Image (cartoon, rainbow, N blue to C red):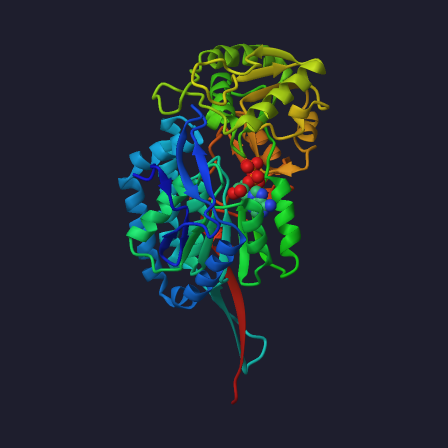
Amino acid sequence: MLVGQKEKGIFINGEWRDSYSGTVRAIINPATLEKLTEISYGGKEEALEAVEEAKAAFPSWSKKTARERSTFLYKAYEKMLENKEQLAQILTSEQGKPLTEARTEIESAASYLLWYAEEANRVYGEIIPSSKVNRRSLVIPQAIGVIAAITPWNFPASMVTRKLGPSLAAGCTVVLKPASQTPLTAMAIVKIFEEVGLPKGVLNLVSGDAKGVGEALTQSPDVRLITFTGSTEVGRELMKNSAQHIKKLSLELGGHAPILVMDDADLENAVDLTLASKFRNCGQTCICANRVYVHREIADSFVEKLAVKVKSMKIGNGIDEATVIGPMIDRNAVEKAAEHVEDAVHQGATIITGGKEWQGNLGGHFYEPTILVDVNDQMKVMNEETFGPVLPIETFDSIEEVIEKANQLPYGLAAYIMTESTNRVFQLSEALEYGIIGVNDVFPATAEAPFGGIKESGFGKEGGKEGIMEFVEMKYVSIGMTN
Ligand code: ADP
């Protein structure tokens, strides 16, 4: 069991270590505010050392056959599933989401290891038909080198494996920096790789001060790519700091997903899907609905049905099997949700349900699931990512109007369409400026499909055959021949 008095949160070249400064960080259960454990907490120095070791491990790891590398991923996949329950408990303890969601996340996280164990063997090159008789043109795929993976707290398992699976499969070596709030799940995953015998130095983990570690990873010329999931603000900073060495980036940043409920939608289904999209992980998901546009003809009955279900959602500690709405990650998250609701109400919004902090007796960070109507485009909730259980609903009359509204923000991660019309599926999917479109589907993330945003939601894909290619350089080899 990982959770104890004190854990070593730094893993470099196959060794679990304390930080040089002796600094530790308390890991807090957001439902109860109890301290779960303390972990050693590093910074720049440890990150640079991890890069050195990853660099040293790269030649032999990248030269292994794809089949050899994939064997480690298969074993780690199996071990993750064997340990599903324990991993889910760790995840819920440090992150807060209901246990059922944590179990699903572990399964999903493991599926990325399986998928990339398979894809490792399908990174093909090319021989291009030459324009000259005495030349042969080859394209050979090669692992890019040492990569840094920086992951967020909202999906502490799947955001880690979504980066480890393809990068390790491609032949890269890795320095992983998990979110400061949720390092325990990442540590448990790294332990699994250790147990299956991954060679030393191939995967390193540095829990630590985000700024210090971030600086080390961006400033080191030996880190050839940074794969990051987190806020647009930090993504922008990483991009700026990566400019010096022209480092490659893959960025999955903030979103502000709209759900478009058309007048021909299956209403019951649309209500259930909206509910699932908005309130899973207490609204702390980068692709979860941040705003709903519902056709005026069906708006009243949509809101009425939604409100009945939202009012019955059980709030509590995620570890309790009956809980549907768990805690938010920290005080700041609660305050942001409250600020968005206050701002909306101040500008004329009506609260249908929720609208305040939950007064349970658990001591943690809770906010009630909230529905707002009478909202407008000036409100913060319609413009900034709330990352909380607040759902603003606006009505629309025409398809042109709703397309314009859906596209008016700088974000472009995910958008959802509820409709039974094939015409509208194509019309809207093509018109919406988003990297991911869910049609009567609010769980589009899956190992076999390319996940990623456009505009200020980032670039680069995770999942699918595209995901592994982020970590591969296509080298062109031109061969001159003598007659
Ligand atoms: P969130 O708002 O979800 O916490 P962040 O973008 O702040 O999103 O955090 C996502 C990840 O980025 C976390 O691992 C966090 O520690 C890390 N991070 C935050 N600031 C920096 C930074 N300046 N450089 C590198 N990583 C950072």
